Figure 1 (tube, helix red, strand yellow):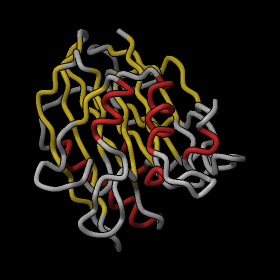
Figure 2 (cartoon, rainbow, N blue to C red; figure 1 turned 180 degrees about the vertical axis):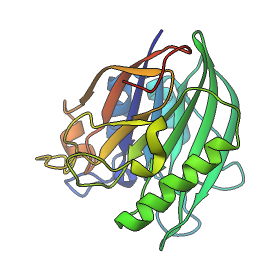
Figure 3 (tube, one colour; figure 1 turned 90 degrees about the vertical axis):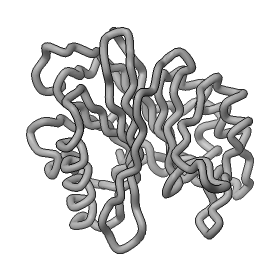
Length: 237
């Protein structure tokens, strides 16, 4: 079975023209035609962190549903992050993972039943300093170790400018993939947005979505990865 995963840093819906237009973000996400999307920076930065991307808008335009990582407040996500999931996929668990660092960070986790079996997806927006990124990935690995075993994908804004690497703290259980240069959107030079695949997941294809209006809607371009699930497989390809 193939699934399309995608990740997009929405930059609080502020485009390179300095205009906040949530509809552009929704249109870009819809064009990805993904089964599961990790979004970053979907809320305003300051308390009470109201949603910059309205729930009704993103769900109406994309047909995906937003998982309830912030049911108690006005935010769309948690630490600015959320996961969108295709309506016919059954979500069996969601969790929030507190991450260490100089600034507040967190990851969002969902466990999903697919036709090929269970799949865990974790959305991340890692810190700017390498030491803290390593600590944050180690915390995610520890959180995974306390849950039942299943194929796991970690995707999002890794904030890592290195050409290779960036996920060593996850250990040999994961292989990191860079779909391509995604930042800055107008003329990308950095592959900051990445996907790490664990046991039972294989990369079929991946890329960067650069069609209009993606080059102006945010400061990042979205990335996508088509994966094959295989419960009997070893480490991800």
